[in-house]
Length: 248
Image 1: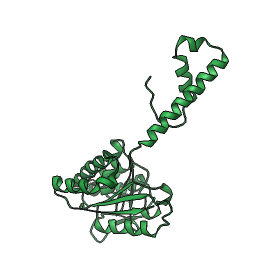
Image 2 (image 1 turned 180 degrees about the horizontal axis):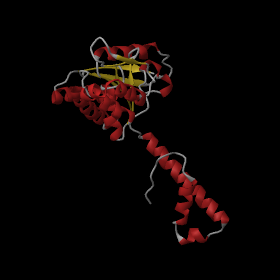
Image 3 (image 1 turned 45 degrees about the horizontal axis):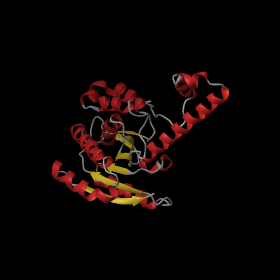
């Protein structure tokens, strides 16, 4: 029998279906027998879920400054590949390019991507199509509702791996983790993969982040192999990584 595990709580209809397609002996049994079989399937289901949870993949966070370009490109790719991933920014506000370098478009974190998309399309649709901002926002709103700020993410729970795309962001993430109450003493690996904040480099950085996460996910214990993973990645892709270990 092949079961798909989407939730630890087994849908009752699925359990009934399993009973319905079980052996004729089970189908013809009385109410007590059906109840016993139902409990047996429930027990088997919960046991298999527990086993799956014991080998769950790592939980990842992608972090850049505004949670728009680099972190969202990586979030998009990792989510598509089935990773447990979230993304954040560390800035005070979300900034997007405007008509000139002195006229950025500034939004609060939590402003929906769709609202930004509509706002910029209203201001100058041709400009923001040409510079790639509207396509970027369209991608983003297909990934999640709105940009989130790393410093406000404590309620999201602990991550196993945090990947940043700028050394300044790397420092801010480590500072924030250091300032939190480290009550769980759960290790978190923080890695910086330096990526320029433009669409072309973000696409390359996203693919590299995916490769790095696949390497980390393939190991039983990253704490024992992180040096080898980092060294091999740097040699293969000629990208220097910074990394540190903090705690929740």
